[in-house]
Length: 237
Image 1: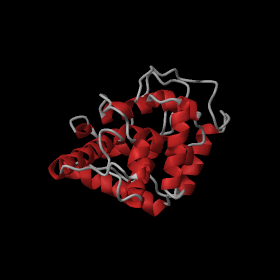
Image 2: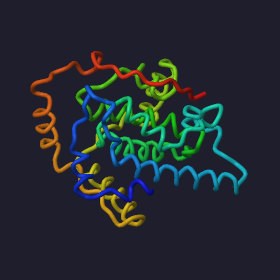
Image 3: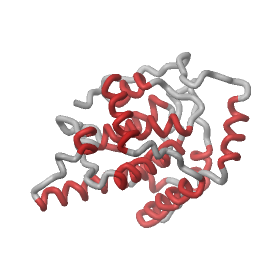
């Protein structure tokens, strides 16, 4: 959490309200919420794997577990993977909060599922992609997310469908839920460093008006083809 220790309330508020630029990715900064989210997920992975090691068993036959498991553990950390996703997809900071909501809902809807080093990367790229489609006005195609995540397009499509059905298509996140998860992230961060994640969303209409003001002079189709970012290739087996 060393990187997160430099977060100030004002800077994070500005970061969460910012709109990502699809034109100049090289100079963009990683959303500050990524440091907090990666720490939370790392702790969950470590906790689940300690429990599995003590019990000598894992819920290997669970449908959700099997859907997202890799054959081998990827050697990229959660922090690095989220930073890669941010760099090549330009997803706004609120996307990662929504992705966190989806991960929590997914685990609640599938009690046999446990986040571990074999499934965390696939779960992250899937939830970020779905959250981006829910939040953002502009999105890359599944094929781009697949390349960023180290998957084949067919595999990315399959994971999206598996996720949606296992979630029961419960994707709506209202303002109250969004702010409650911001509060949870704030508490987690405060325990570790004494700084705060301020509310990212005051009301849905305010965000819509903000986005409209940013895109009035630069209307583009929902899927961004003209400013494609070429991602260095990785592979999740």
